[in-house]
Image (tube, rainbow, N blue to C red; front, top):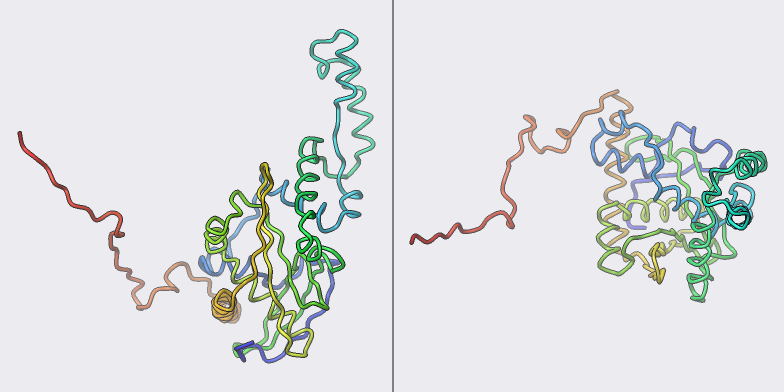
Length: 298
């Protein structure tokens, strides 16, 4: 690790109350990068269909036993076929279907529900992924979704942090992050990684785990990006030194800014990133907007 910003760490692995901990995470750093005001005033958003699918996919691949405990696969094909066989054209509108549905809801309890078609897609994605021997190795015999939290001593002072890697292969010093993607090609995922600040995540997780281990053996960080549509193509991306270095540079500055905001109870907006005291930015046209306006008269 090419930085002395972090002097020491006091971090434990504990997932019991992870989401309620008063500590900054990588998602918080990304909000700080937008502006401290955005971090301070962020609101929880309702999960989108894509987020719900991604959560189910993650758990099915990384924690299959937990998936069985927390998810219910809703499949009404048998009851619908039976009712159609009895002559009903709209089986889901019948009393028999509604009675069956009520009995299923009692079975479901507090489980999350996904329909069979979605589950079959998730199963096929995992099957496709695990046909690749190295991908399968990366996602087995490791630690899934372990939360870490504690205090780090830095040049800016002590900061409470938390993080939860998707998958860690401790003996091999590898951190794996599993992503669903619209485009898992090298061009498509490179753009997504830059847009979503994945470099901050990769550097922070790798550095924290190295500090916890305490033997100065670096962790490699690998993204597995898989597309959600046929043929469920995927790619494995190992983060380069350049990728990690930029991420480390940014997370260190963002943690310093966060510490300043906490200590002074000041949460500025975009102006904190301006290089003059007036908060005055120069507006220029992008290159693509500069064009000649030729015309002809007839």
